[in-house]
Amino acid sequence: MADIMKTRILEAAAALLKTVGQEGLTMEAAADLAGVSRKTIYNHFANRYALVDEAAAAWVDRTLSRLREIAEDQSLNMAARFKAVVERGFAEMHAGGRLMRRTEHVPGTGASMLARLEMGRRLRAFIEEILHEAHEAGYLKAEFEPRRLAGVILNVIEGLMLSDDPEDLSFSKIDILKDSLRAILGGVLSEIGSAALRDSPIFS
Image (cartoon, one colour):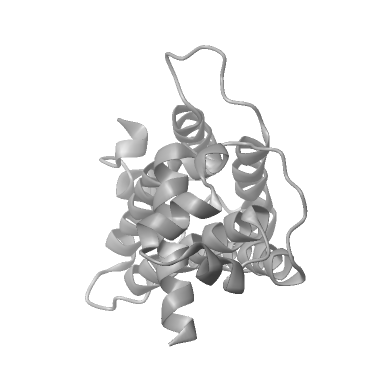
């Protein structure tokens, strides 16, 4: 029961992060959306910062699970899986756009810090795995090493999460992410890799 309650709170917190950002996520708002008391939410999370960290980690966990289902779908050929993973990954980042807003951060609990570290580790491992498979299939130019390329992509994502929002409101961090992915992929894809992603929204 405790795990179900915590999951409900984390889902409510993730929904708030997506809509009002970290600055709008309060313990009270999360409790109201989850339909639990303030006391219950404090039984699971020491403070707002712990809730932010664990909600973001849970969101990444769910996203990676969805992407892994696509990556392991043997009914799709390699080209279809590669394209679907890239498109779904970008769509998930777009849907969770306000999760990429910077806020002041005060360390939460040890559990929340571990959740953040585990989130980064799992994200890196998944990106490396996809890039390695794409490299083996000839979708990336031979000179690009998948682990280093994964580091490049993670640096872009982490940099956007830590930076201020653009002052020019005509574009957003998601626009910057799209441009970054377009620039990176445009430079590292082989001819067959480019063909596989030709109709991807990232390049439209």
